[in-house]
Image (cartoon, rainbow, N blue to C red; front, side):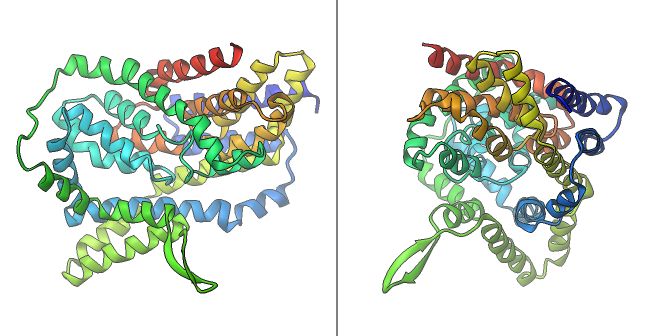
Length: 417
């Protein structure tokens, strides 16, 4: 198949995923149909597809991580940690809006699939108190949950990108950090301020007892903090007669904390609450969307979709900066997974990045892929948080688009200068 036809098939697949939900077809089914169409028309090796479907680390492990993430939130809710956490943040923050986005940003430090759903549960009461519409609540939570993934070294995309471009993690972090500043600025200008200006909700800050409220915040958020510390720092381990820290995989971090929370409920004979948590985390709606999104990622990678796109751009002599923007953007849009657009497109961009690599070119590629990631109707965070607040996925994408464009436009200006 030539590049023109291959690129056309990719566009049709994207259109299928966008259009089907308009006819009341569940987003998970729409994603599966788009993925199957791509696999069928671009001639994938179905044996390799099945191998990928059976893969524990890159497929089923992620689905289980989503289950464990949902479970942690449900158990924290039943134990009473969620209400205590939200009350503490409300007491410490300058406004209800600041409380809400602070909680979302805090959860963003955890690289869990569907993490915006976790923060959605945490900020639900705040959204109700401020009388936010489903669209407003989802947009605020979704955007501010995704401030850190440009550089935070717990995210797989950061690790893989630094390896592809052969730069150290510290160098990558230092040069990509400004993207988070742009995201905060864009989120404030285009999302937070327009919403909060209408709401005009303020509150009196506490004059005394700040340390007590901060202590309550630490106590109520210990499950999340434990996952972060285990994953980022690790546990002490004796190696060659010395004590060293070994990082714990996110799967085992979540599993360990979930077991502790379940044991707390069982110890207090709160069996119904433990069962509620397990049933909630096993909801087919959440896990079905996760399965479909991961299947779409397999379809994109197994059909060499990005290679067709790359050939299409080269055939028509598209300028380098356009290739650096569009290639990662389309991969992010189609998969909704950061590591997918990094792995699928960044090797193709090496001739455009230069040697030694240009960090402005890397920033443009990463910001563009992340723009597609944030605009993707198959992005797990978007779908799950929109379902929670009962918002329309495409209206949320439209609502956050100005902030997305703002970030990419600034990075492009820096690259061109």
